[in-house]
Image (cartoon, rainbow, N blue to C red; front, side, top):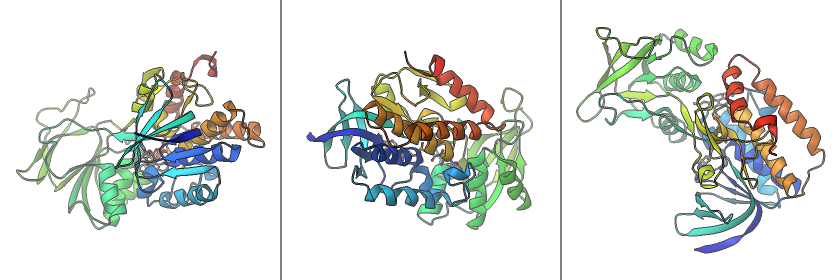
Length: 367
Ligand SMILES: Cc1cc2nc3c(=O)[nH]c(=O)nc-3n(C[C@H](O)[C@H](O)[C@H](O)COP(=O)(O)OP(=O)(O)OC[C@H]3O[C@@H](n4cnc5c(N)ncnc54)[C@H](O)[C@@H]3O)c2cc1C
């Protein structure tokens, strides 16, 4: 194992949260190491070709794929920042050592503070034949189409009507793929109605209170059986119908990626409103391990706007805990917290606010 060096702050994950966090750390004067398993910065943003919703101060209206460039340019030029791409953080030890692996070797890093912004992973659904080729997660479909220019098939059944299911369905249509239907187990559409309206105008049926029962096919998907569900989301016998399709795309939610936070001994809590287990944190994104901060979807599944804000809050606060304070840091923190409250103030934010409240340490500060 090679010892790389000591740094003030290591940031794991260069999605919107990690990019914002690393820039804030560097601007405060901290030597900052930004690590990502991918070969380019951006996280989820590298496949988001649509114009982003969210807050204008956090680049709403800009295409997701263009946002990483806005950060990358500043980061590359910043003397306090070092980056490691194609590098996976695999272990964080009681001694405060972070072990990363770049495909050739394991490297030991000694950060004084760690910011975990590893994002989220996709959920799956149980149904007959769900391991047939042709059953994809929505992230894989987006990566195929928007990163590699490959369509996943000719006719897709989309499972899930949250923003991801709706946006990916529309992107499939734009790529010339037929979307047979979007099905949703809940009694109402989960995503923004503006996205649903675009699909409806394109003639795609959105069937609420429906689930997938089975995929058909021997070598690959040739169709699916769907059925209506009762209030407990159980398929109602006799309501089944067949859908012809060669792709079943699952967009049924995300789960925070928190392995490193468990390893760091952070106090964790199951908060369904935030997508699963998340670390208990204070208002400055500091976890119960005083050397470890969390930012973005790994602290609770939200959106890129809130990921950038929590990233910057974590960056400013982690640097400040080392005695490094950016000019006007207090005013900036107050502004960021006000922006976050505004993003979470809409009807869609109610659930997030309830989750954040449960995940935040009593009184908003650690004793
Ligand atoms: C289809 C779709 C549409 C969306 N549309 C919008 C929108 O319009 N507006 C909006 O605000 N949000 C939108 N979002 C949500 C937004 O993309 C995410 O909330 C946001 O990307 C989360 O940012 P993050 O930095 O927390 O995580 P991510 O973007 O997921 O980045 C995490 C990074 O961590 C890296 N990583 C993970 N584990 C490790 C490890 N162990 N070692 C090293 N690196 C690691 C990953 O490679 C990745 O680059 C959309 C999401 C999807 C899927």
